[in-house]
Amino acid sequence: MSKKPSIEKQSKFWFLRYLGYGSGAIGLDLSYGLFYSYLNKYLTDILKLDPRFLLILTPIARIWDGINDPMMGSIVDRRPFKRNKYKPWIMIGSVSNAVIVTLLFNNIFGLHGVPIYVYIAFMYVLWGMTNTLADIPYWSMVPSFTSDPGQRSIIATIARTFSGLGQEIIQIGAPLLVGFVSQVPDPDTGKKVFDARTFTVLSIATAIGLILFSTLCVTTVKERHTTKPTEKFTFKKILSTAKNNDQLLIFMLFAMLSNAGFYMISGVGTYYFDVVAGDTGRQSSFNTMGAVGSVVGLAVIPIMMRFTSRRRTYQFSLILAMAGYAGMFLSMNALASYTVLNISYLLAQIGTASMFVSQTVFLADIVDYGEVKMGYRAESITFSMKGFLKKMAYTLQTIILYAGLAFTHYDGDLHSANSAASKNAISVMMLILPFVLMLASFLVYTFMFKLHGKRMEDITEQISLKRAQEDRAAED
Figure (spheres, rainbow, N blue to C red):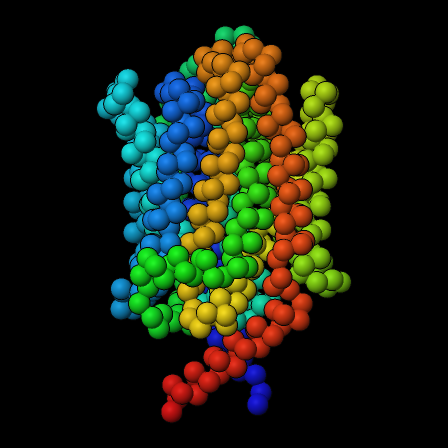
C-alpha cells in the first residue's frame, strides 16, 4: 500500500501556514523574554524587594504550576470549542498575558511595604497561569500538523526561529531603550541604567506585540489532524501520564538542566553588564552576537542530519554550547576584551538554538511513545511539561541568583559601586555555572534517553499503521 501524502504537501500554501504558525512564537516570547530576563532586575532595583522573599515566592509559584500546567493541558485536550481545538486558547491566553505583563511591570497603585509584596506575588502567579494558557495549545499543535519526523523538524525549526527572535528583540532592544528612555544615571559611572520608566515602555510594547503576533498566528493557521482523547482525564490520570511515560521524565530532567544554563546567561546578564562591566549598553552588542548565533544554529540540524543521526546532532549541539561557555569563562579575567566574551557567546548560542529545536521534536516523539506504551494520546498534557520545565529551569536559575544577591548583600541603588563579593558572585553565575549545568544535561541525555534509532523507528511505524487504520475506519 502506498504511503498517503501529508495534507501539507498537497497544499501549495503549506509553507506560508508554517510561517504563520511560527509568528505566534514571537509574541509569546516577547512576554517570556521580558519576564525571564528582566523581572529580577525590576524587582530588586526598582521595587527594592528583599531577595529572601523572592527565594520563597518562586518555589511556591512552581508548586502551583505543577498543578495548573497539566490541568490546563487536560482542558485543552478535552477540546471544548467546536471548530478548533487550539486557536481559541492561544488568543485567550495571549490577551490575558498581555494584561498581566503590563500590570506586573508597573506599580500603578503606588504600593509600598506589605501590599507591594502581596501584589507582586499575585501578579507573578497570574503571569505563569496566563502564559500557560497560550503556550500549551501553541506548542501542542506541532504533532497535529503531521506524523512525519522530517516535517516536524521543519515546523519545530520555524517555530523555534521565531521564538528566538521574540526573545532577542527584548534582549537587544531593552538595553538600547535605556539610553533613550531612562532618566536615572549610575552613581559611579554616570551612564544611564534601567529605571521604572524603561520598564513601563517595555511592558506596554511587549503587550501590544504579543496580541498582534498571536492574532496573525491564529488567522493564518488551519488546524489539522487533531484528535479528541478517548478517555476522561482526571487529575489522577494526568499524574499517571507523567509518571508512566518514563522518557518524558528523563526529558524533563536533561532539558531543565540545559535550559537553566541558558537562563543563567539571560537572567544574570543584566546584572553582569550593569554591576561588573559598569556599562548596560554593552549588553546589546553581547545579545546581538547571541542573536546571530541563534540564527546560525538553526542550520546545524539540517546540515548535521545529512551526515549523522538526530541523537549525534543533539549531542553536538550541547558540546558546541559548552565550548562557548568555556570561552566565556576564559574572558573572566580579561574584562576589557569583550571580543572574547561576545564571540564565545555566539558559539554558545549556535549550540543552544539547535538544542531547543531538537527538544521540541523530542516532545513530539514522546507523545507517540506515550500513545504506544499507555494506549492513549495526550498531546497537550505532554506539551504542558515543556512550559513547566522552562519554569522549573527559571526557578533553579532564580534561586541561585537571589541566593547569591542576598548572601553578598547586593544593593540595587549602587550598580557598579556594589561590593567585590557581589561582583564575584555575579561573575560566577554568568561565566561558570552555565557550563556546569549544560555538562550535567549532556550526561543525563547520553546515558538515559532512549527514543532514538531502531526503537524510535518502530514507534513511528506503529503510529503510522494506527493512523491508517483510523482513516480506513472513518471512510467506512
